[in-house]
Image (cartoon, rainbow, N blue to C red; front, side):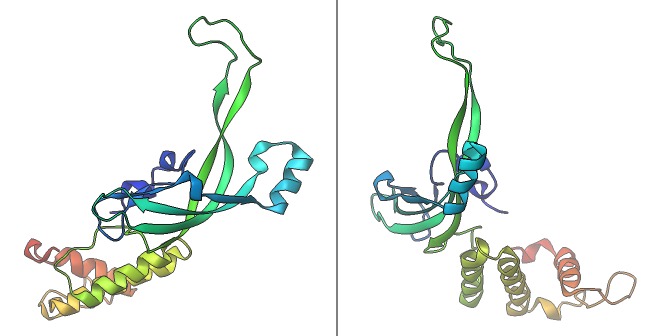
Amino acid sequence: MLKEEFWNENLHISEVPKFLCPICLIGLIISDEETICEKTTVKSKLCYEITGEAECYENHFVSIATCNNPDRKEITTIAGKSNTVETGWDNGHDPDTFDETHPPHRVYGTKYTVSYTNPAIQIFAIPSVIHPDLTSLFEESFSLFWIDPTSAGNKVRIGIENSLTYREFQKHSRLKKVDENGKSCTTGLTCLKKNILKLPSSYSL
């Protein structure tokens, strides 16, 4: 299962996302605001000049994040895009007195979208008991996740298939390249899924 920080969009608003440290796997890597460098694209500037909409702005950013584990404090490079997004509405009233203090207006924030990290962030936890070759495959998938999710998924699929080989699951009498009706599976992924579902729970990672 993907870790929460990869699907919860709220974690990307107004700050560079925090991730589990890829080195110690204990602390969180947190971007130091002093290291964040952002530059607005020319195309988005032209869009703003024409429309006057703040949402036109798009920046490219790079940042150095430091692990908050006091025993390691390892660093990670993070890069990606940031966009101006509407986050709410200010009705112009003082929250305590309810007096109108300024004209109502929209409120904006910055949404950070990561497209690169070095070292690669773990997208899912890698079991400690698997073969080192499989660990390498999964780590390669993490590097590809941001720029080519399809290739990253293929790396994971190959890793799972290889795990069946390393554990000799392919010798299990119920693991066949056919479905329950005796027909050949239409795709490798279909066969892989059926084979995994047929394995006894004792083979789980």
